[in-house]
Length: 253
Image (cartoon, rainbow, N blue to C red; front, side, top):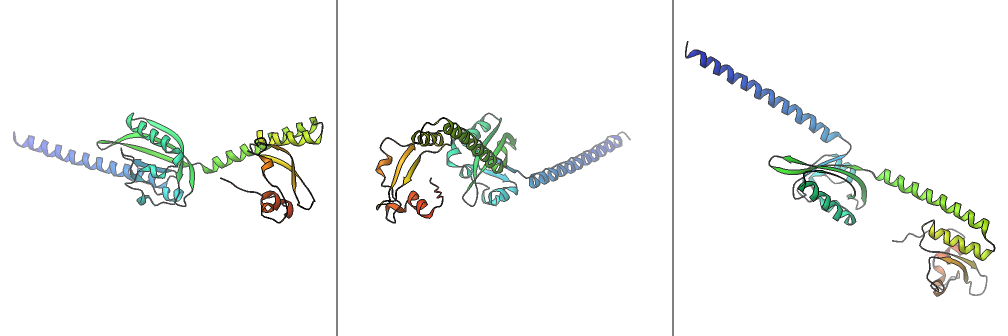
């Protein structure tokens, strides 16, 4: 009996240990299943980077947002996804977050498979996985919000421009002052680089006589041979708009 009691206690202890390990494993599996479901079902991009900035894990929504399959980027550095103008800021944020074991919030432009860039809001935190530090990040597509902000900015700018033009119209003493002041408003309030007003001449050369402008250096506009004739010089924006009697929009980089 003296030897039996310790043996029984040992067996009971081992069984308790087995039950505890099984319960722990079950809890771990349930936790992994729960977090895997969250990882794969959220609408934001969730990613993990190692200390070198390489992708270790990316959730499936990454493909929905960027067009890239997650597997295409596992093992590759995140900096290839960042717009060149935002890269230095992104690298500094990454280094600081990893080095200080802290967190960060930033807005960056991210590459899509189409070659375009989308506006994204990124939240990241340094976390230890295994024996090494990693960066856990969440990226949200905010392109719609950014476009709405730009549209609102354009709308408000247009309202300010109209208001300033109305003031010019009230206070102008003559046509020349009116047109010059209007040009100044368009440049200063509407944000255009250049603006000018010209009169269409019905002479043999079909010239366009400029009478007001803003945003040009002195004498700069006089260098252009403005005409609406069907000649090489006449097929520019001004000549084309006059001949077709239509507005002409040109997008420049």
